[in-house]
Image (tube, rainbow over all chains, first blue to last red; front, side, top):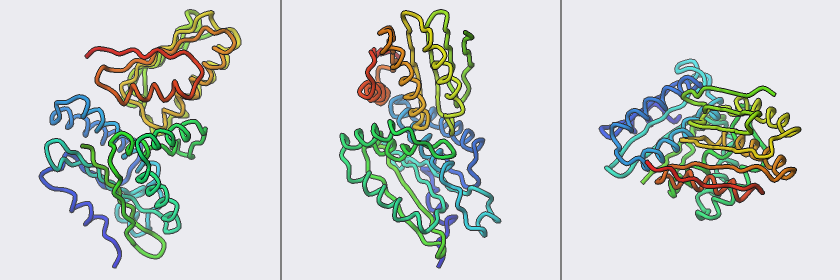
Length: 183
Length: 126
């Protein structure tokens, strides 16, 4: 059975949800989500250091969707629009925050993406720093201005492993889910 | 040579590049999705400035947030300054960070370790 991204997104939303979004992710939407989450964080979290760390992770997470939500199955695009992706920001308990995101990818991208995720998850703090600096200094940008550093940055800032999954939609498309805990 | 003065926005920083005084400032937030568009004029300006720089160039970087797309562009800015410094030994980068913001301090130290240019880490009290 094809993976249901809407159901997955619904399952993330509960009393602990600070903000959630699903739909087209364009530059205006990125700005709006960041503004809304920042305002809600200001209300909820008194510790400025934690607030800043959350906001930094949110910026990278949402902009990661902006850079990578281009491959959408036609039936999904017809129903929910171009560059469709889902996002939720929750606080499972008082000192923990979680950013969950998901977007469709082509089946052939899985191998490379999985290798990247596993590499990041296996690196120590110091090794992540070295990898970050190597990519920072490589002068490469994607067409949409992505620098290939977002996921490493999130792993580095949080010190936590990235939880990810590839969920089959059909032979051509998979849904990529990513969760990052900030504690 | 003309100055560059850009007012900050929700996603882009306040910029003040002043050739007459040799003072270069980037302040605020730098979180645009595509930073290249924003930073290209600044890098180009530094190319021109490099032809006849001031004896001393003071660079003040005071960012509250910057995204990873900006981080590469900021490195490009620093690389231009590194070339100027190589020629006249007159560039200092002041990297400002809030006292509890270890991530911002570490980001400055990352740049410092990549570049051959004097960095001064400046802690700001809350």
